[in-house]
Image 1 (cartoon, rainbow, N blue to C red):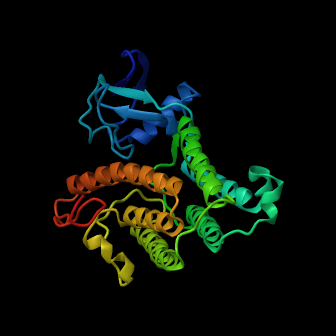
Image 2 (cartoon, rainbow, N blue to C red):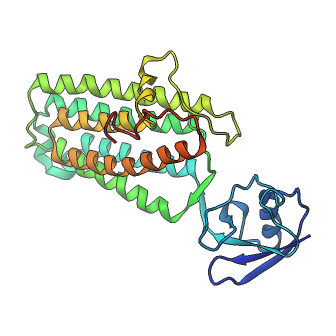
Length: 301
């Protein structure tokens, strides 16, 4: 049977493929790649309508109800880059930017800055910052299992700008010779809360890793394990985001720094969008999904 492949932009005919009803969309992508070398499989997205939802590449032609002379629409996602590469670049930047400003104050505040005492909170904040992004890098290398292999390369520049610029903004203020730290009690309480959130975030990432078999895109309902820090799954769909936001709120309270608060708020705004999307997806895909769960904030959102 023959399937016509049309572009989502203008409906231009790109190719006509001879396929078997049991052929998967992944196999069709390989055929397209042979015909048009610049359209490698990760760059392609099939749709049944020009503005429709992207189709799962594991679906077969027959499962989609396609017949001889049927049409599929192909969206060119543009040049792609591996998710792992994106994450490593995103996280290495703020780690080194913050550490650079922390260890080289004379480059940013003048030669006299090196001889001026730095508050204990500034030292603790640097340790927390470096630990957090080192943890993210290690999780990217050894924990995360990505459902999508790639993302558009243009997103790399946007994401890196967000992380790198905010790292410089926060580091410049927290390590400034004129920086005034809050009282020790406030800083230590916030530090304790930050540590719990970091551990909780890792616990959730580890649970999600074990939820998806290696090399699979299978989705299951995440549920708490014996680890008490995973109990947050009883209340929200994305506790990793809850812990992430909690950690940055704690960092803000520990440093009492407005730029850190702005970074926490910006991150919270983006994670709310992601969490709501994932929450809706869970409810759509699983009829038995727990009704009492919220997206990111227990009992609220």
